[in-house]
Length: 167
Image 1 (spheres, rainbow, N blue to C red):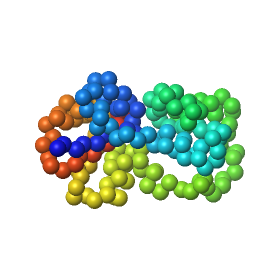
Image 2 (image 1 turned 45 degrees about the vertical axis):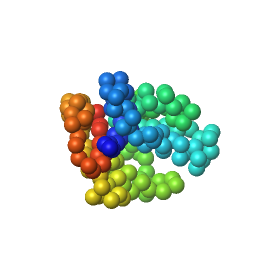
Image 3 (image 1 turned 120 degrees about the vertical axis):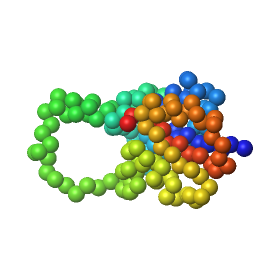
Image 4 (image 1 turned 90 degrees about the vertical axis):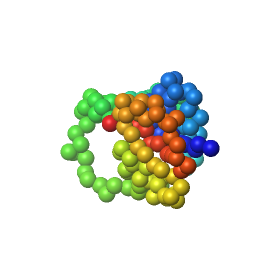
């Protein structure tokens, strides 16, 4: 029997699969994206009334946040943040340097997660390498080519795909 998993991290890819490749939508891993998972963790650590704001490069995260309003209060792109800071006249050169601290702890491997292949690097490091083949593809053309040919996958090994809409 064929076993394949497709990452749920990129909301654009999840929507693409559900809309245009519904026959393989059951291959999307049934876990929340990192943004939603982190939001749940924050609510658990700091209480359900804690406000969660996501900043990132992805405009699709705004739509995903709208689908999880009880977990993510707002999602903004880095461009939104930059415009907001400029509109408020924030001069970062005037802010005293401080040693960076993270609550409740640092993310370690999380820093490579959003990069092409970052999830594969993190996941494959913790799992038995011989039983699964890990592949990553970025960009809509590469993703469509991959999804169009996924039914031709004949290997007896498990397949994990990290698919990111942006290159």
